[in-house]
Image 1 (cartoon, rainbow over the protein chains, first blue to last red):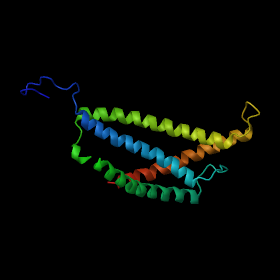
Image 2 (cartoon, chains in turn yellow, brown):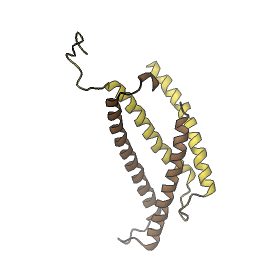
Image 3 (cartoon, chains in turn brown, cyan):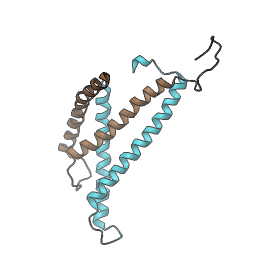
Image 4 (cartoon, rainbow over the protein chains, first blue to last red):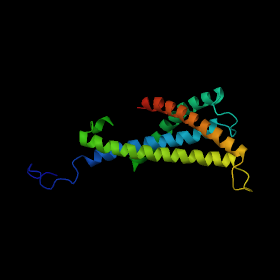
Length: 88
Length: 85
């Protein structure tokens, strides 16, 4: 807080920490989202044998659909969570 | 995040630092989950210390496949997260 506009008692940082934290939260969420999606779609789409180093057609299509569904699921589950949080 | 307003240059710098941190964390996490997955799948015989030819081949194929899988997932992740808002 600047006092009398003279910059007394200024915060320690020269940037808005709340703003940076809000962005950080988003970035953290995105990072976890990517990791979770990687894990769940692998489990669903890549059968447990590795005779071929390439993704076959079925596996590739499965990954595409898995990604689309994953994001739809996020919206539904996330909305519920947000509603709950806003009631608290 | 529009309500927050665009970050100032100082904030931008801070955010880039955080981003690098998160990226490294993400890569390390995904890399280790790949190693764990491939190890669990390919290594079943623990009567010997050294990897057999078969195990080595399995690990290589598994790793290669995982990398290709990761590329595909990241591509779709980018597309889907772009139209999430």
